[in-house]
Length: 316
Image (cartoon, rainbow, N blue to C red; front, side):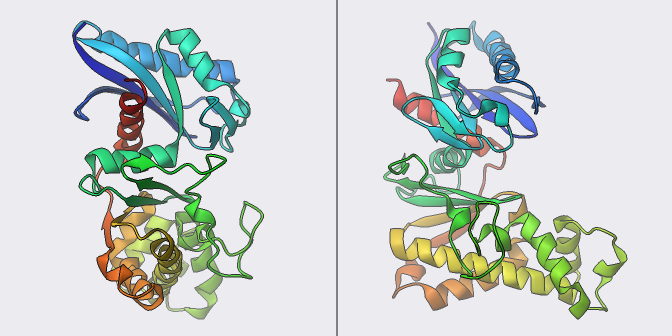
């Protein structure tokens, strides 16, 4: 039969990535293709199956495929294997993904939220691998996260635990896409960096950012690294609000380590001093001193590796 491996899919709104992973966390082969947004659920499944078959073909002579995990950017019913809401891929709303994959591939399948998968990946092979309790916070277009206790994902009653981006950090703040106000996603994400810079622009007429028609988060980061006062204030606010959210997580969960990932974490040197200071001010007692905060190590591979680990743990 050969050594056991698993297949792991990371289905994003932009790209579909698939990997064959062994029990040591080594990625043996992986593929990437553009996600067919706007297509039907059947066509999206076809893409996943084609990627899975490509990985299986490359490995089948030497390895036995144990199962497949699909990590999805949305809300899932973990037990039923159903995607309940996929904001970037609405064709998959209320779709029975596990049943479809098992039918098409003839192997066991499991479904996971992409942030949970990434948290599990960092816990298995990345920045938090030597810690039993950890939290992953992803700073991307939005803010996501996953919570690991005793090396297992915390799901909650409705499999929605870990919605870190919707911790309220400003009671009467900016309206969030979730319908609430003042969520940390509106202050510490890549999109928030752009919004805050726009809101503050008139207060900093000497900023070099005024010469850029529509500055991106990357533009604002570069300006900050060059000492631009507007950009530095944007990252100060970003860091402060992130610190407020992390203080709540530290006070409630007392994790050993918090891992920060996502594209906006590139601004680490600009926002993290403010985050750390806010945590020192707002965390209970000595808890904050014992919580390590680090950058993620796995990048885009975190979700693939976490999905793979879930298959190994679920199908003995």
